[in-house]
Image (cartoon, rainbow, N blue to C red; front, side, top):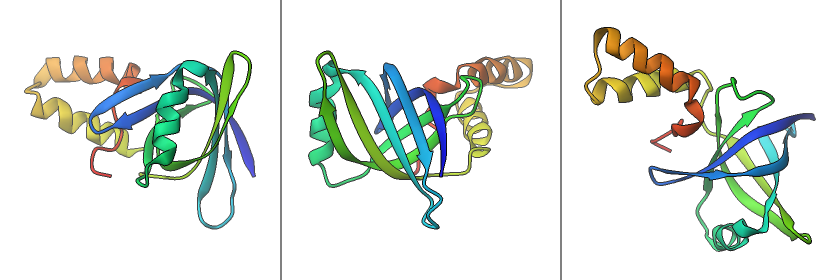
Length: 144
């Protein structure tokens, strides 16, 4: 198994992105042959109702995680909530899931979005660079 620190966690709800403010977090590649990952988010209890509702749903919870450094590409996952533990002021959410798409697909998805928004030429390049720096605000996978 390999363990990494999480610097960003976002839940993708349709086309909306919900930033989960982390106190701390880890992601573990179980290396079990099934490409299974465990994600533990240690966060404020204000997210309890949100995650409890998501835990009771039968469909996957789509999340994207940035690992180790904010400059890294977001990695999209299809997950389900295994456990929620409450503490005095915070809570821990344990998600289990599978990597959704290849990480290098992010740039292609972003470029396609910018072209659809009408960017071209120097404006396209400038906006592409700008959004690449702010990639935590862009859902990596829209079709899963």
